[in-house]
Image (cartoon, rainbow, N blue to C red):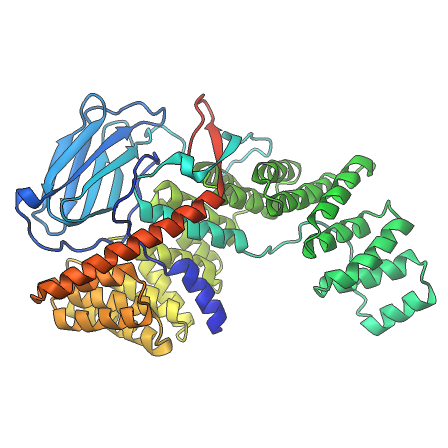
Length: 561
């Protein structure tokens, strides 16, 4: 794996951001989990923080008398309450550190959130949605009717600043990263059945044929298609355009011309041509029309019309329920924060195409974004088993494991396989080390600790600039009482990435445990400064991405993701 590829993956998969103060308003089906920080130090009630929240059902009605269990770091740090008639609950006089919230009530699916992070004296508000136990699962029966209608309607778009916060900021940030990576996955099947010259004639032969017959449709088309397949869209356009003028009824040539326009960022020309083909082509087949709709969806997304894009992708899947069409439809929904509809699309697509690893990976990413982390992990494990040599499912699974306080049931053996298959891959070793550590947390097995430490060190040996590996190595040392080793690891992480807010926070904790109060406070101050800056960047990115508003089946209200 090249450094450029690894850097790209790490940008997507290795960013850990924990928001110090954030607005919380977004309702999710079940709440996600991510790596918790250990309690910083004991506090008296006057120094305590507070966690309060609201619990709703899928119709956004308060859920009364629901059990809410709060668990902090340590076996004795556990308390329980019930929601009031208006769905509210509150826990006060809390120590700083990481907390898990478990919500349950008869008739509802139990929800677990291990992602609550509380600073000293911080008051944090969270909102949760409990799904009825009678609600359909994201996957369901293998018997799929091709004329099934989607369980949602995209009602419009808005910018993300209108939706407020949510129960877990890190879950949304990680979900956004997974969605962007999903949208970048290359197509594994052709989007249309356009013909191409497979005779093996070299460029010189194709050019000679064009010189001999410059008005020949076949000569122009074959050389244009040759250039298009070779990634030379600028050379392909005049030839395919000449072919189109000679024979505008030839679907393959016209489609390839539209693709060439798209490849050269001439999006308006491409869209105009595709619309003309839809209006004038007689007796067009459903797969061919689906290919044109698919291409229109791509063009609409490029031209900042996501609403138009998702409607084109939906039409394409209705005309031709291919793996590619379902993937594009689901990926578009996920990219624009419609995670529940994306899970519906990826789920139905997976049942139609059970051999598609990327549809399962998409389903996993969508489920994670709704908060169903355990179910998401199972889908990614299935994807990894389907295509064991494809790194995408492993990387998604590793990122989810990184963001989870406890072990994911199926993750460790898959990530072990990934590390065994790619021993020189820094990310493979890093994610396997995390899985080993998560499996061992609370057990303190010396052999497992040694194995996890060894994998982190191997990661650093492969890539000495892997700041996150030093960070997690420090967390491992700190959890096992090796404060001095933790300090050194955190210092090295900061030397590589001085803007890592998490590394500064962790170093502050380590300094406090060894009695260096002044150094500790300095690191905490730096953490707050960096976290504010990171939050501004994330919010700006979100303002640039418009999200879908959608209406779920049998519900009248518009859902704000």
